[in-house]
Image 1 (cartoon, helix red, strand yellow):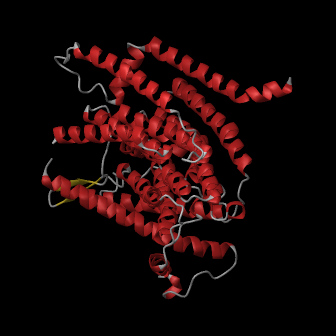
Image 2 (cartoon, each protein chain N blue to C red; image 1 turned 180 degrees about the horizontal axis):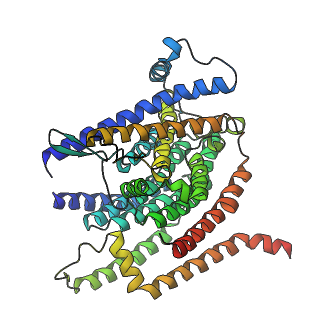
Image 3 (cartoon, rainbow over the protein chains, first blue to last red; image 1 turned 90 degrees about the vertical axis):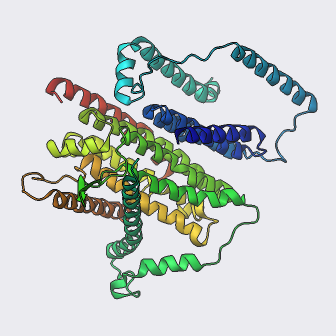
Length: 168
Length: 342
């Protein structure tokens, strides 16, 4: 039962990930990407990490993808207005992407699958996760919040840039 | 999993869907009756005694109307939009505790479909997905007004989600649990959350008006500026789905407001009256429905009393008033818990 669900999620995730790339319409790409995120969230639930799954949905599917969709709707891309790439650029893209794929493949070929002897299956529950985060990983956790703050301020400055220039 | 458990859960889901659809149906009737009361009219009174068959007549009309799909619309997404709106509206009811438990033929039946330990986050996740129906539908219509409505809906939902999430964090801090059932039980043992979190309740209430796209925040379908907003091009039952999803959302928001801030299914002297467990559960459900109906009335009361916001006012209220207030609320709650204990 669990195995079948796993295979279904793998199939769904891979299929929609491929469709993200092959869709002509950027809106369709975004919608396929959302399905991919749901498949990944399903994997988290299979691993008993409910908190991670729900946060994944809220952050990626609920917030980031809405903004993606928002921006793409504004751009109003379609086949007539979309800048057509020359064949040379396409070939260069395929070569660059293919090389990256080869590097990944080479790196994964020699890696051994490490299975933990006694995995703690309760770790994904919100209580244990919180304890772990605030006991063992307190400093990284706080540093991440500073990183987010920096990103927020950066976004505000980028958004205000034109106004600042205009004032001068 | 046992087969009885599955059957019981399916029956429960069917009953909850039935209740939410019935409530949504009669909310449309109540809305029109209240509107007529506020405007000193009679309102619908032709279909059946006092017009109580009006929702059936409306539904029948929507079903049998001619369906028009614009030529340049993206057909698949055009159909997907209202379906998504309906789906996300119905999903939240899974984690709401409708009562304690019933004992039927020696089987204990929990009046909650799924008591997951991240219940409140699940609700939040579904709420954040709710905007897709409107966005996809509005974009697929290939109409400028629909697109503007969809974009308004998206930015409005994102803005008010933040304040809503921050106001919930204060509730989580007080109860110390993310499960909605634990929250209801906690309020049964102490007092209603609204006593501890009056500011948080106010923020949550305003945000739920905005999230359900109800007046005074119904900018996405603002007819004076955008014809019909995101559902300009929709007709027949697809339009019906959009409108119906709004009423289901209203029902679910009211259920969330009751559960988070007004004690959920708990009522005074719940365990001291000497009633049987089944009786207590049923009474709890009745009390919860009573609270829900009060909040649905509140939604309508506000709609027919307060004029619509302007769009920049809406954004200013969300970002510059509600979010800072919600953060102050979290800080105050933290101070209170530190000094006066939990």
